[in-house]
Length: 208
Image 1 (cartoon, one colour):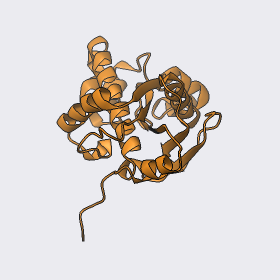
Image 2 (image 1 turned 30 degrees about the vertical axis):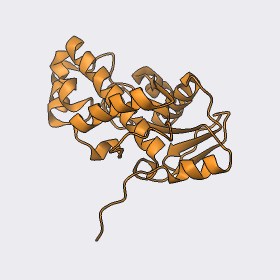
Image 3 (image 1 turned 180 degrees about the vertical axis):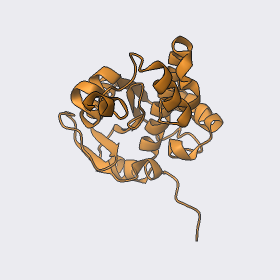
Image 4 (image 1 turned 45 degrees about the vertical axis):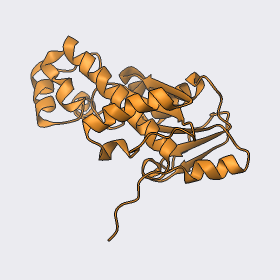
């Protein structure tokens, strides 16, 4: 078996050859945790200055993610990150809140893309730009991989800041995911204002 394919710029260059530019990649981080917002990032890379080592954020070490985060901010043509809060997740559901964060990130870009590439197979409505989804796009498209890194690092840093204010939950070690440490802290202290009360175990306890 060969080495797994890493993200490249083929999809973006094909669009560029057709005169479709700029192209933005969008990805999210934090759909599954019990606490914290969901984050979405939109990135328009510079075809002449592509960061080296781009990959799906989940395949990178924290050190490589931080390095690439800085490279992307330094060399990309445009970068934006946005969040949907735990309260918005509870009110809208995680899918709609994820769409909301993506639309916010897209609107926050300092230049408007002519085409948008989105990780997955679920196309957000009301983007106001032509868009397409790419399954496993963070392993195929450099723009989506860059967005996955920006979203992941931005959310992790926010969760570390929340840990300072709510140290009993140890958010900086698990970033809100349902680890044994996190579940034990919830059992002992109950939820904080940044927990997603529509998620288990909170929603299950409310039905009892």
